[in-house]
Length: 379
Length: 139
Ligand SMILES: [Zn+2]
Image (cartoon, protein in one colour):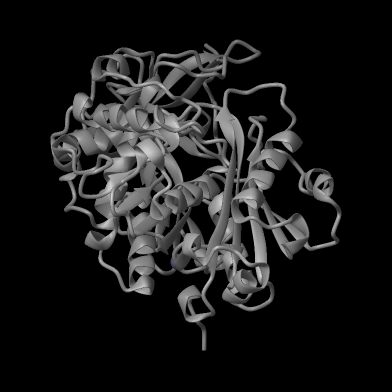
């Protein structure tokens, strides 16, 4: 018989930390990663030797980048593994750190994501393509934007409002790459990239690091960790793309099936979620995914956005961190940074970004390929 | 006159010529389970996993319905100077493909019928015309 994460022993996030996401710089990745890990250890108030296992999420650093970073914390001999799963690398590392602790193999594990913006290299499958070299990610999502706009009679302004909200949230986040409020005119008037997408509706290229430490109840007791600040992971689901019926977009369909499984695992309905951190690399994605997660019927996302229902303080705060558009998307760290933001919110420690009374948060990532990961955390 | 040369002969072949130029056949495949895919490959069926003899080549007419379009304003690869327009087309036989809109095509909107043709995109080493697939509004 198989079991889901929440049928194993409880696992809690007990420490969170970042190196600010930023424009590409000369800072070595080792410094980015160590900053995030030391800040997560300090947040948990534990020392490095307490960490029994490490998962290093990175998509662009190349082979075996973890040990040259972790050795500077004191080489304890604890196991480490690298996780590459495109944009979902960090989410995948978090899932496996949770599974390791929930299964009883370790009491304390680290998931750390770190990346520099090196060129993306993908291997040739041996199957030809018509023009896929001309369809980079922003054009994939420009096509989806066009489809969404026509199907739901949404204007370019409607869709661009996602960026206005997320830049507003990012402006209050000291770990965000973009910390500047933007008006609708600024968003729409920026450099045109592809289709109706402008630069401020696309995630920026950047670097950074994020770390979370997870622990069992035994670990929390043994190390004297403050249980009042521990946030439980109540669902973890990973899926990959299937063959969907003709006409169904795989991005939305894959998110729907992954989110449905995660909600069922946590025994929650979409209306129970207070905050969501989701993969808004491009504005239209936020509308697609809130509809796929089930916050509203298909095509109703713009209405919720305009009503303020997706703002901090609204019905369900979407991307209170600023999301990929404002906080940034350094790839390896991104999914782990989402977990950190949700933990901060559920603890009530999010300061000017605090969504009042937040008790339940959902983290969602997709990665090219395509994969989807959803985690639910509860106070 | 030099003969024409196809840019990607593994993916399509020249069909009969009509008033609007050469028609094109896409080199797709069909699985024993009924799944139709593009391009042809023998690794295995994405729907059922069958491979080998279960997968047979199948010519697909380049006719379909436009799902989406996007004009690319910025593109890093100097070999494809922007702007150009990408179209996402649901072929009548099932597969969804993404490729370029013909430079001389009228603007397209989702829901429209579109058709693929071979269009000159450059010259080969011995002076022959190089043709590649481009979509435009169906006549
Ligand atoms: Zn098949």
